[in-house]
Length: 116
Image (cartoon, rainbow, N blue to C red):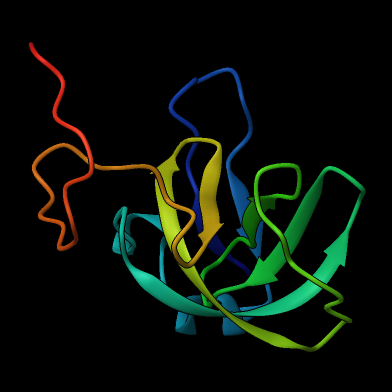
């Protein structure tokens, strides 16, 4: 017995099923939103990306060239921010390294105003 856990939008692709019912205790990627702060457990790195368990069915991915992860080792926890969620998965950023979001409010000192 297995449960369906992913139905692809493209009908020519296979439905994914699992017997690992622990996956159903985890969040769906759509349960995350840009700007959410999450605690991720460092899993591995491939030189370009770092992968974190953020409590979702799939791992969160952080671009190492744009974010400094220091000297994390497997199992270390890090506070991260969700950059975006799309069909490619959950993209992460280190706290404070997220680009400005339209409609977001920021507190700080104005150092320069540019004409529109």
